[in-house]
Image (cartoon, rainbow, N blue to C red; front, side, top):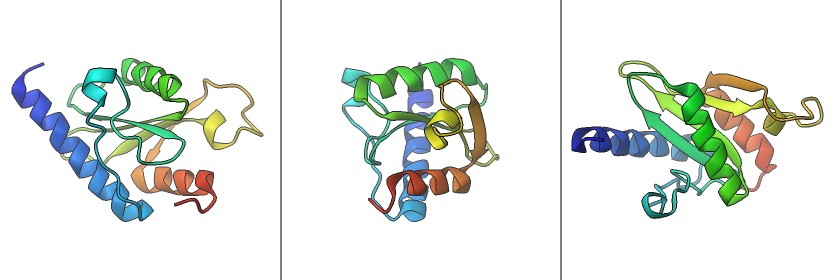
Length: 129
């Protein structure tokens, strides 16, 4: 990965975390240990391991697999946030983590807008933020 690609990724993380801070009302920051420990991009949101991708070429399946591995390591639910240039942020989550009473097994993914993902996160925390 080139220095410019890393820089773009870091800018994307900062941009997203500012948006999440605004939408959720809790300060969301970068997980600086991620580089050394293979962790999620942010662990500031209780129960959620946030993975961020700011790339032009989409690779949802491999990104989701990475998000799942990181969530398993941290004992959290995976959430993949991604954005291409001049497009809005999109979020991938497993329906099992959104409505486990209906989707009893993992593996049914859904994609949604950032504001909808923030609603899911807020509801999952039951006022914990």
